[in-house]
Image (cartoon, rainbow, N blue to C red; front, side, top):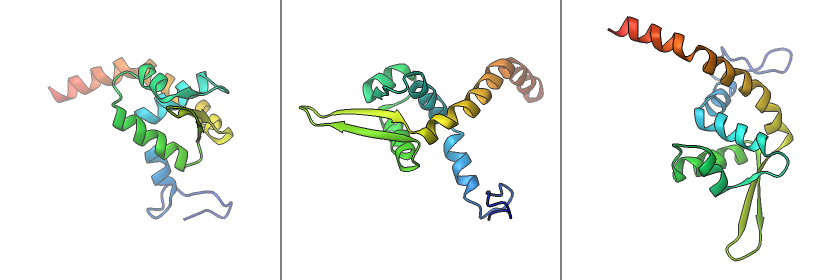
Length: 124
């Protein structure tokens, strides 16, 4: 489950690293982390995130934010008002994820055409 250095072992089927990579590797997480990093330290309200993330449904955004909060990557702050105002902000741990995700996003944007071309040539 962990190596002698106290780190996870991706190649161990029982290691929680695999679950974490599943959660942080999906497109909505990457987009939401980027949106919140761009708005750091102020964060954003739900509606702002939904407008800034084309294609995300209200349900998917809500589920993704709940997972990010549960994982300690995002803070959810409720300000008592009518209706209550809710802001989402990256925690220091969440902010530390933006760098690695930005590298993956840049790679995907740079190589998207190559991958699509290869896929089309091999699939017919």
